[in-house]
Length: 469
Image 1 (cartoon, rainbow, N blue to C red):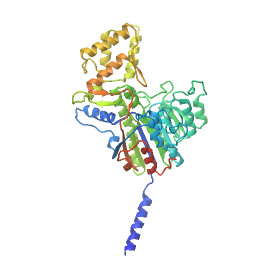
Image 2: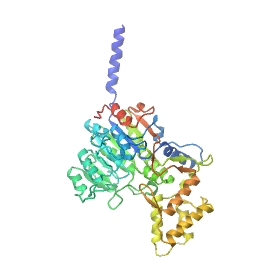
Image 3: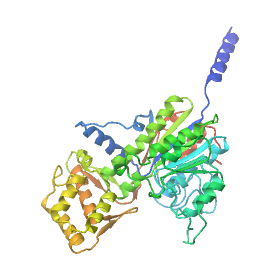
Image 4: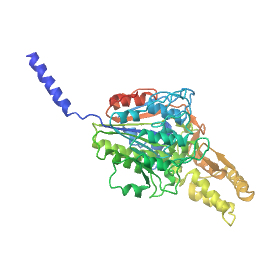
């Protein structure tokens, strides 16, 4: 009798197993520079918009599995984006500045994207910055320096991946030594890629399943998409490229896909210590996660989504004086510090010299200063001194961060917004803070304890039976 029951149980197990769907879809999402405090600040901001002393969760912070990981590189306690991206891509530590190679910068290391490609899956790489930037490049390039943008683009061709999306390419016709080189774009086309510039080009496609490189419209910034806080309705957004990537990789494809999506400008806003812009970038990244999550809900037994970061940027501190956060003041900031700097330069270059009162009105319109945000005497004097040097003495004072050189007036003004919000910064660079991890779907249960960043791609690969080496 026992043997009969054992046979019945075994038969039921086999039948049920035959109906179980095998895993097919990996969506790996990286918020560059997005530490736990960047996530928490955004959730507090959403709640305070409704005058609530709580947090309103982002879609990825509701995922059933969450943990955190280290981010150090093989050479430094504080990683850069090249080493951080490489760890998340290949499952091995390397030294700062190196892409997809070991610490000696002599041995190429295959990424999980290559493992997926070898396993028969289609592969897509998406970012809100240039496609040859450090984090996206870590998944397809093998170079001793992240600054080798032209050479990195050559590795894109060699990868034979199916979909690339981002703002464009930083150096399409110049090598790392500054030598003029043949444009990379005809080389892409010769390799079988169709080049798409903007949403209209993508929407015109008769078939979405070919090899595509989806970029910003011609004449726009090839270095990055606009900050979310500055974007106009028709601007190309990260969620647009994410949706296009999922549509393209799914089209006429029964073998599944691997997609990496990077929210690259969270990091840029943190380097500038621009709190309101950080919030908008995290929300922009969250909108892309929502696109991925909508896909997951259609294929819950076949899909894994992992959301993480390569490192934290800025040493963000939620509170430095008193016990309250006042993020509602960030809602009055209408543009990024970078765009504010641009508009101040435009104002200074206009034919009629702007008065101090006009500049104050300008700061009121764009940041809420001298209106909803009270400016004390010392702060106003600092702003006025910067105005005099800039508009009267014609001395163009700036504050430099990694990706921007901001006007002094803009830098002071945004610092005041941070201050009244009770937001502080420890640095304009990266930190060694833990990185968050959120997961849902096939294999998500593996992300439930503290780990090294190199464990993340290894666990994804194991869940999908992919060979990393």
